[in-house]
Image 1 (cartoon, each protein chain N blue to C red):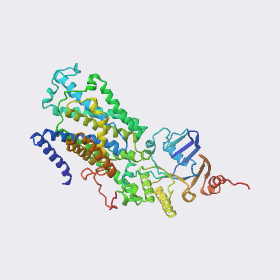
Image 2: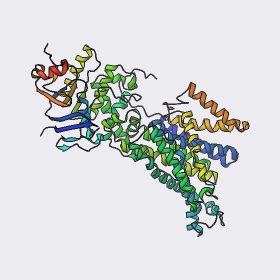
Image 3: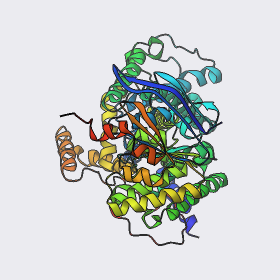
Image 4: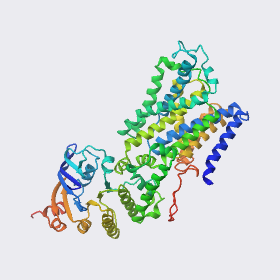
Length: 256
Length: 344
């Protein structure tokens, strides 16, 4: 049984077909790439997995249980972490608080403990604090712990997002264009980072990318989609030479 | 040793304020002003939880005060006299033919009053669900309209309930609110809300303000957070309402109109958004100002409004927006690494 199994996933926004008959079997620590031109429906697939929309049709199962109809927090607290294409940090909170919030589903003290500041509160809060801080250290941004997230340089904000996603203690990590807006040097660093956390946290990763170089470099297998449909699936080499992928990216060849 | 400063300071302040009131160093006027400050601090910090920390815009706080005030007042003027003195639960006619305050002269009242307020607070918390549940689907301006509607619903409900005096309201409420009680409840409110908001539960509430969808994706149960925030907020509004009723000794639905809600809003913005310290300062500044300007009579409101406009122009974050006094700030955790200094 794969960690994530998607079958016949179809979603309409009004009359617009955003995703059509999408399928995916993912597990065993694989790093799968999901590529496609702008507006192909990649982010919509992430949002469907995470429960932001209820799919028009299809089945999504995580760890053997169906995710259809669950609220996003119920889905992600089962162990799905994600990052966003356009950063969605809690800008006016500190970096440390950003990472602490992602541990919400694992708060171990009750409300009464909170109001009365019991030993259980301090113990639970201490664990949350420590885990958050350790993640910042792993990502090399602990010096920013008490800064507001909005004040960080762009590349480091991406790292905060990664730390926040890891704080969920995910089995599956969904990365939505993690290198968007980065310089080539930063991009290489991010690719290294993805490889590193993947090994360290034993993650299965689904990676949306726009830049071929990134997916080609680190993914074992790639799915290419266009207009919400899978147009090709295979190893990076197979994808690179696939006629439909080239057409989707560069436009059709026209006979003159 | 340092950790005892705050409790010792509070006990000291309690003894000074209570002593000065009982021994007559504070005139009735000063005592009343002090009580107003405390009650309004409770109202302000509770509204700040929703408007500041959660980033919603509630304009119906007085509705929840009304629920608390009416429940507490019915308990002290009808229910308790009924069991203690054997008077009827619903008096015939507007005027009471018995002295409702009679039972309230014994020592037992000091045990009963907190319970009465608690009942009012719990009732108000339940009423908070009226806003919390719609807030699952709507937010911003639209939710503001819902809170406005709830304020009107509560007010009209009391206006049209003849058994509760209709628009004439309730009279003969015993004077149970005193400086020590207000002090205790103010400390409980400020401390309780501060403890909640700076826990990870509270950070979930702040995450809703920052980005509700991202909060959901980061495992925050936003529905639960909203219910918690609205119910805690209206609970303390109910407590404040109960205290106010037993200070005014007379309440009617008009006491809890949108004007009262606006007044609390002003204190929130004056003191500062997302700040427990600011809420306290807002109440002190607003009550202090409106008392100091009393000689100006009606012109007082012109001056106060002008000050507000200037405040919005030159210091939009209020006196202490997003900041806390040291003694209210969340305890800094121990870490070995040094950080870059926090910039504002």
